[in-house]
Image (cartoon, rainbow, N blue to C red):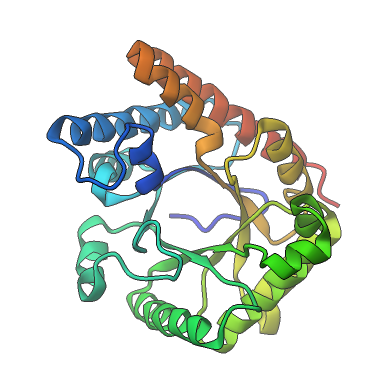
Length: 303
């Protein structure tokens, strides 16, 4: 894998969703039936075929996929053979606090699938309790050390959900995202760095202004670090995501995106009704290409 850059960005289709993915198939708390399990695995493979088919139509950048081994083991294998960039999550799905899916067996799972990036999803806010923050940081620092020793890149997906007090202060979610969250993101990045957590790449919620994007990059690169940032999708509508990409792509230090449900959720929901495999693959391909081209076009406007 060639390290992504501003001129050669990483364009990831994300489908590492597990609990939320199962809900689309009517599976909630219970273990999926063999039929449901097979249907979910088949759906992830079809979604992957959309980005695989899009690859030849890209005008630049590196096509990639972020997928879990529970429902996407076949995707991980195919993507590796196809030469796409491969990222794999290791956190337990649906948890408020970070916890490894496979505990002490994590390294064995990384060894089996050999992803380019090992991904974690973390919810953290400077206003969290000291105990919750310390618990998360301990696990993250241990994983960061393990991956550094292995020479494997860490992709850190950071969500900074607002506290009730922060939402009251902002007055709305939109104002929180614009005015409060960027500074909190930078603070959380620093907290992780001080604890010995050193991602190769930060996966960041969309930012509303160039200044906010620059501040987040500065936090990621503090102390001469080489870490970069990519934009996550957060299931946002196309026009919102287009804006986030237009903000981030021209900022040095942003090197791509990882977008998921905004690309495949609606086509998959329709596929659950019509079972048209070709239509699902084609729609995912076209949706992915829309965001890839939007990012590449915005990156060309870099100052």
